[in-house]
Length: 245
Image (cartoon, rainbow, N blue to C red):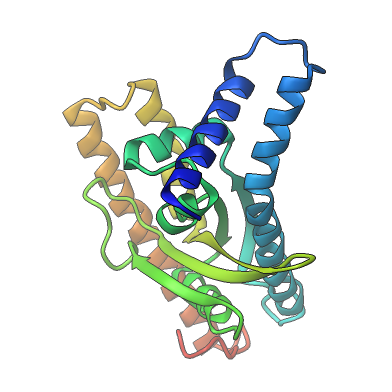
């Protein structure tokens, strides 16, 4: 695609996004229908990639549910960025609003959050997913071992999987976040507080949140130690979990 064609494509999609988010047209108008179709085609491969990755996770979850101590996965949630959110991120990054530019610069259009019981399980689940032959790891960030300054902990991974369309194969990126129940609770509350104060959390409150993150991590470690003690006492069967315990 030439630079001129890319510019035209970006302008067309940007105009479509603005039309869908800001229009006062009749919901069945031709212009609005065309704009919605353009944007639907933009997001379609990411929706398919999300569904493929969710299938992989659900297979692992169901298979491991037959273990003596059950599945390590507590719950799973997913999301596809809205067109408005995607357009805003593209503007912040200086990214052209074209499928090609988005594919190369924005890696969290599709996202999945996996919540596990224990820290070790988070690593294990991510390892099982990233070791599959059709899953290519683009990036992994270990915020459990190296938490963010505010105390946030989680495993983040950008993975790429093939999506087989009718006449082509699209490599689609999906963001994975894998964390424990305690980490998820802290992150959820922190997110609500963050937006309540319009991203300007008072210094003292920020310190208390960081302290709470430390307490949550200590709880995770304590629960892991408790599980190990139960296994050592024979109250729980040992499980092959990839050597994480």
